[in-house]
Length: 348
Length: 260
Image 1: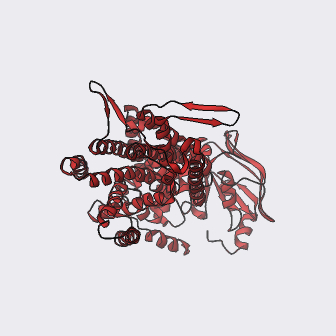
Image 2 (image 1 turned 90 degrees about the horizontal axis):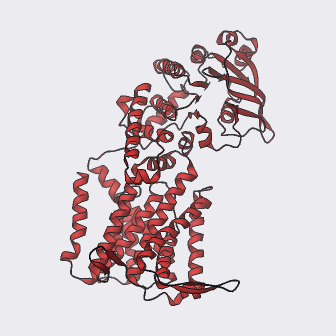
Image 3 (image 1 turned 30 degrees about the vertical axis):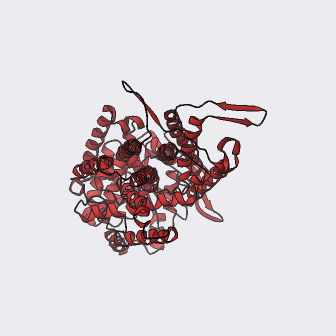
């Protein structure tokens, strides 16, 4: 059943450019796809470890900037009369570096904040995103500040036997995003079903118990943060090479909020949740544009989110999965515990 | 008492919370393969002592060593790596997972494979996964919960959750198991089965420390009993010695709590 749904979904997504000729809609699907990858990475932290990263866009933006700067090259002065000169590299190298450096940032942010966790993690991630945004805004020599980095080259793939293929058309970019999204999805699926995933779930459900059976909190959460940040960085790189212009606005808080909404509405802690939520909230602007002013659209998003969570409180995917028979571990009844505790207090 | 090598040794431990002295100058040892119970009236300091022995609490003075290693300053997972595993009184399960998945989480220490192997699904990782599943089934059988394997742990009865807690602790392959009031909330037949389980655990060479209220159970199962009152050890010895110790009788009767 699940396999059938998965195959059908992938086949449908893969067939889209074959029948959808409207470039505007295809463009919307590509940017949505990029944000879905971001939402999947956020879900790895929020849904599977319970840690809310409210600065998640920082990793996305770092990926975008690293990738753009790698492929554009730069020439900046550092303190002490050192000049750092970098000649342009192919965009695919930028993509790899984006993943690497975003992952590294995830490591440091995770290491710093998982010692305290909870609210502190939220605050550290928000501050991190804000600091990175300010750097991008003010280090004009490197980032062009508000003038934006422009003319970012499109990703080119070196295919054996075909020479180099530069992905310029929307269809090519669509497939690129789809492939990266599938890889990210598989990676996260493998991870959460491995014993690392179980360690994460254990920590989320009952930390004291998880620790007592030998799960290393910092290590487990840091691994999750690194992988999550690396995937977000990959999404950022795709964004930079597709849109081909980035400015510090990419770090805006609203972009993190968008990802959080995608995860929560689709269902955190479910693999398909961010995909479903992402498609809804990514394509909603397209649907609403002819009928509403942009300001009114924001109100509509809020309304849709509330409506979804009112009807399906655990998010679309988990709620539907539960409703349609696939009753798995999710069903919790805590009442017997309370009953047994009262009974225990009575003298035997 | 037969001469055993010492597994855990508690040396002159004192715990103070501000001005309140919870434990003063407590010293005793637990031998390898021994079942030792820690008892005492309410407020005697049992839970505090238990927390010190599992390194959940650092004592104000004195030290606890396990097989020669001092516990103070170790991280919880390092304590687990020593083979020292505890159970919890209240929150003994991962409520949203099935009993079977609970055990797979509990088997974390046995399932360490490299991250990349796990993600790529390499043969090594698959083999390890198969071993874990096998082991989880064995553990379920050991504690007698095979029939509840696919129920959410949070939906089990209190007594059954306790068994899951013990199975989780066993999954971590302890060399010493510390049980925090494991039979409270169990009925007589469940308690009886639990005593059998404790014995079968000890028969596999695992040292056991028990903190418990249930006197008949403690008297049946223990090799040795340590009695605490007002944060001090007032008696120590075999069940027969403890049963007839005037200080113990006074401590319990004096509080009108001689439900034994």
